[in-house]
Image (cartoon, rainbow, N blue to C red; front, side, top):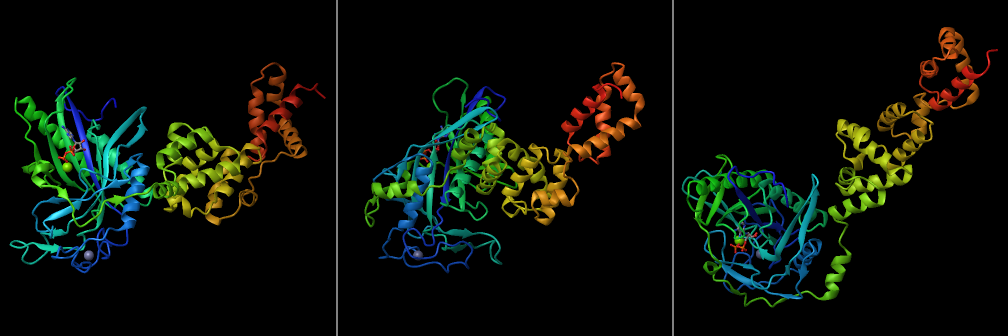
Length: 491
Ligand code: ADP
Ligand code: MG
Ligand code: ZN
């Protein structure tokens, strides 16, 4: 990557790696039959397994594994035919078993990358791994009469399936990190693997960041910022942390390897604890679960079911329809936009014009009406027909804007709207000839000037004819006729 968007004043390079947790869109939890739905009254979706009661055994959720494999395939990872579960130990009130079931030394998938082009440069962020794990419960510290002295626990989220996606330290600015997270979210949503709703905690990001002197190869000491739950928080927390570390290094100090919390109100990160090493978690293989086997035909089936991903669609629209980068990105933005564009491009026979209308007049009208494109009363076929009417000279470009406004309001077809607005262009030669003759007889002085050699006056006369037609006369037909009359010998 080049030209990072936010760099500290001192000569440091910024190094960022993200760990993203996304809730998988399954009906039930990872290792029990409890509902995984968000928003139920506290502790109504629980059972001995997700409450960690002694003797309860986990049963893996095959749908969660399918979704995690789908994520891995969408990101170009290599899916392991056999991965395994491990116990990660730590002690916290919302973790009833005293350990989390996750994947450690044999993850579901490794490798892969997410890349994108923006402002003339390509960002490529390689992935280390994609693995499955279960979520913990939730501690509620606020909103109760006795919150000052007590915390409450909700175990509805305990055992909900998550996919964790870990990047290589390839990001070079806070803005790029936020952009990566946005694009990753769009991919997860596009493939139906996760709702990735950040407000509900369905997508959470831990950000690791360090600085190193420009040109140095070794990575510097990093801090980890936990539980960022909006793209804005991610970017602000990283910008704060980059500036903080730069100040520490500028003063000749050393960055402590801390885990830090983002304080949204204070706009700063706060040291929470010294970062754990993996030894601190005393990982060991989960004895109650067999290895997770993913057969090749299952991978093939999931790969075949993948929808077209945002980046692939962008590239395809650019090459199939000859669109520029910006136009292709705009047309690829959502499933509905891309489908509308492809239908309109076909109906109009002019993809560039269809795109221009969609980005201009149609978008403005939809925005004014507060409508998504899938609710547009103007179908892509109707827009295509309008574009054709313009290119064949049946209506002028400016008249077409008024026709579109009527189509939006009435849902009528393009030709019906044009007729109703009286905007069909007059191409019939007889009608135009009459107008030309009238106009020339009203402007004898200009006619004389033209014949005396002042050719530019023709433009004025053409304009007068079109004006007399109420804007309906076809300009090139008028132009030809006017010149023919002026050039013919005086009668
Ligand atoms: P941990 O076991 O502490 O989670 P990992 O090695 O798995 O550490 O890395 C976690 C994340 O931190 C990854 O996204 C990785 O790219 C990133 N990372 C590792 N070292 C650094 C560093 N020096 N600076 C910035 N990010 C880093
Ligand atoms: Mg980590
Ligand atoms: Zn349960």
